[in-house]
Amino acid sequence: MSELRQDIVSGDWVLLAPGRAARPRFMDQKKGPRKSLPKSECPFEDLSLASPAMPLYQHPAGKDWRIAVIRNKYPAVEENGVPSHTFARGIYPVRTGVGTHNLLITRAHTLHFTELPAEDAAALFAVLQRFHRIAAQDDRVRYIASFYNYGPSAGASVWHPHYQMLALPVIPEHVARSLKGSERYFKSHGRCVRCDIIRAERSARARIIVENSHAIAMAPYASKKPFEMSILPKRHTPSLRDTPPAALRGIALLAQEAAKAMKRRLGDPDFNFFIHDAPLGSGDYRHHHWHIEMVPRVTTEAGFELSTSIIINVIDPDNAAAILRGEK
Ligand SMILES: [Zn+2]
Ligand SMILES: [Zn+2]
Image (cartoon, rainbow, N blue to C red; front, side):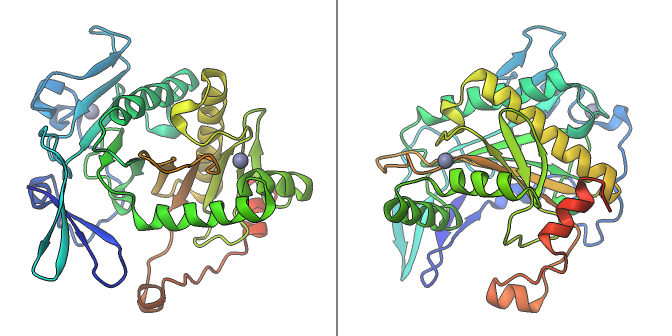
């Protein structure tokens, strides 16, 4: 059984999922460069081998699917119908790790996010939204984390392009902290902080990388990592779940543009993107402005970062944006 252990001092949750140690190549100490896996050895070519059950969804339905959703064979949280509960183990808090861990698989073995036809990139986000809505109906779920790992140093253990969605019974501290910040800003200014960021950055221009009518991609003013990007929907929307189809499509296409800029300008680095969505439950999250963060894996955290959580970033974000725009 997987469980969430809460650090008794910091409040941070750790998801302990011993079953995942069986997943492919998990303890490779030296990750090495990205290597494609022959199709004949790919676990996602025959989905009946990849998942204990039939695909949950196929887009379009039938044998010509381009995107499929399956349950992860090595789930980090377990979908077992029992309520999630917190209990104490001696002095330590624990919460049972119930939830959902789905994979979204795109059909072509070699087309990673930047190479997907634009229509598939848009459809991918529509399918993701559909499964966020489904997961949101489970009243045990408090937060849905969706992300993409590209390359071994970004944590991809399977070559075939896939995207993950984890529905959790807790709100991660990292997310809770960010929500507190946007709530504080909203209370003192009467406006959404990310709407203000968009306004300020669009007038300054320096840190904007690409933009379309639905979203902007920018290097955050206080970027923690070299070349990290925020992709912000232009229209204030608290949750991915509530985003209208046209806007979602525009955001997906812009996310793909941003990833392509990174690939082109930085020499195809490993990277992650993830979605910061509004949590579920009784809280008021109208001040939240959902967004995507994209982070190339070009640095390693060292002792200072691990000890202080203060990240030393050697690339000025204005410069990062200029490089990603192809001006340097
Ligand atoms: Zn494959
Ligand atoms: Zn906003």
